[in-house]
Length: 302
Figure 1 (cartoon, rainbow, N blue to C red):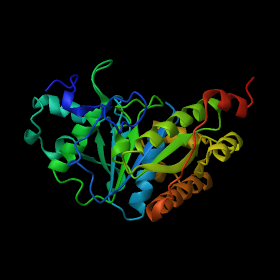
Figure 2: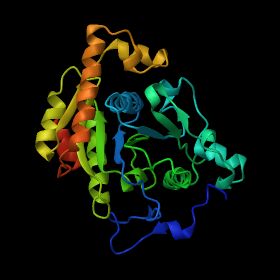
Figure 3: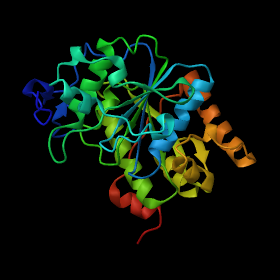
């Protein structure tokens, strides 16, 4: 199958469309994640979603949970610090067998990372063609075919950038809670507002709800707090701007593998507390996203 061609049967425009003018990839309802708790991580491009996702995955594993992290980005570097290398993507390996998934072995596309976290890189369609939603759908279908979700406690989708088109919003069709990674600046918050809109649209037809905000690279949260108060969001964790986090990426390591200095222990504790709160059940948030102009006014732009 040519991945740049999405079957017409997978595109829908119906009376319960997710939003005005929606043309969405509709995932096969028979291909569901199962009993695992599913979290989708979104945020502005370059905000640190992969670092956040990988450390959160390890935190869940430290709590004794069986964790699967799925990277949804053509860069396929979501699990880099967990596996210490760039892994082949699901699309890469499917191409090698002419998309006959029955010919694949589990070890062809699932790799064990630090502390037992299982890692999958979905990849993406060729640039400017196809649909990311198709890629996500094929990845979940493959995992189900190989019974890899049967014994999984937590699934984390790490999703690319801030342009939440219908395709790359597809993980929201599987997620219980969506989490937004942001920094304490206008561009990150502007992207966050659009993501809130996307999650609200998906919640019309799917179980996904907003879980909260992870303030990343943020020593202060005054702008985030102002925005949250306006629309009804809450910050669940705050990760300060520390050089050791940058160093961990360079060392191909999660923060749980770094030398345990006081600041490293502090961040580890923040991730462990976040994982515990999410496992206990993050209260769903009902938010009202702002108009673009209102965000400019709120955050002090003329």
